[in-house]
Length: 234
Image 1 (cartoon, rainbow, N blue to C red):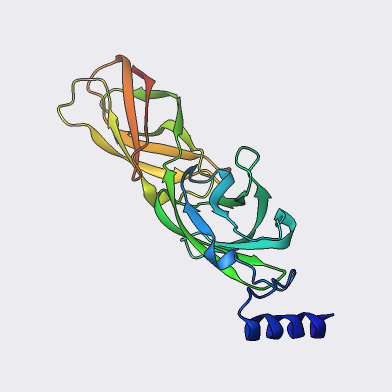
Image 2: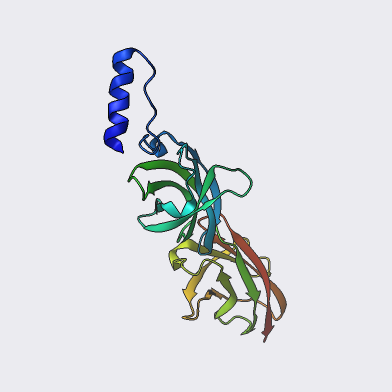
């Protein structure tokens, strides 16, 4: 069959007629596809599951999502395979779907490659991940002290929704509620169960009940404030 088609092409070329189109032999066109970068949002410590890039194939063979494979370099030193699916709202367009968990907030350059399994051609897409700082949740504590005696106690407990957050991300300040002119620095320690504690040292001059205001700040910008209580006796 191919031999006959080539003979017809040669004859048409010699006589000046338009050559015969050889169906099934035309080149595929994934490399001429239009990549569509995306800027997608994620939160540190939480699993992202969504679109990271898109592309439109000009393949004359009406491709399906099953003939493509994709890999994602997430920009944080890790990479993984991704799934390609047809865009239900845009015929001829394909979405690259990925899953990932970022350990820290920030902006990441994401590199996406898509390969056509039929002919081996490849298209690359540059996207961007905007990863937000995970929120903090703090809980109050009640401490008991004696006037004129140094107190060292846990004044608050908090949880970062980023389970991967290191202890060095946090600072804490303590207003002891007795009119002390300068809040003191708290010490943040891990409790071994995914939570953190704020410890502080202070000496109350008189007996009474005091509100202790504890503020915890994450380097990524999240913060939490909680009001604990101090019961001071003579």
